[in-house]
Length: 210
Image 1 (tube, rainbow, N blue to C red):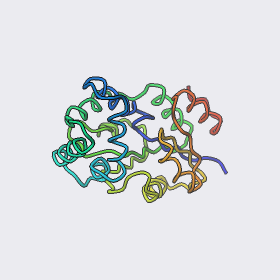
Image 2: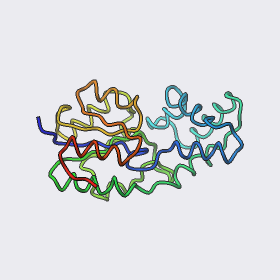
Image 3: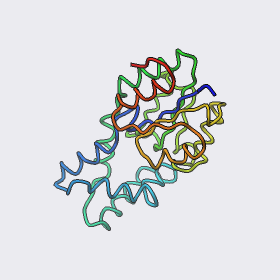
Image 4: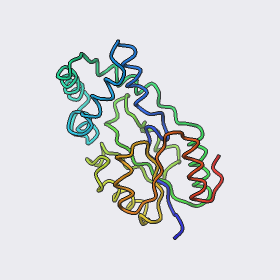
């Protein structure tokens, strides 16, 4: 069956990874390397980060909750500064923008599927993305009250694109977010190096994207 749609994660795929901001925070605050990654890994499963991405917390509530989680883990955190670091590197990767434009020009549908948070100037996926024309559908965790890897958010993206799982390719930088998609029958690509991922996507779609 021919592919009809490509869905992209945003942070770490179309945009730089927030993990870069986590590492920068460690370095700038004399924390052991990996401290922020470890905190967010836990928080994004059961804590403040997951609640923020489901739209359950305001930014003020999130800041207080994440700083409390950091204290419980043994260090002090300026959560607003952390979010500012994430927000300072929002420019899309040019190679991904070109690829998405070429995918759309070929007649395929494109979607964005992102775990994000309410727009207050430090958002991981800027609201202006809707005006770029890059995506036919944008599914945001903070809007839907669901976040990856909950299978329901993938089902929602497929429904809004009006495609079957078997007709879709999905790119994400996290294996835990790719597994539910793969289990549903979506073709998946893990993005470690964007150029390598695009080469794989070119092979799958039989299109020149770079």
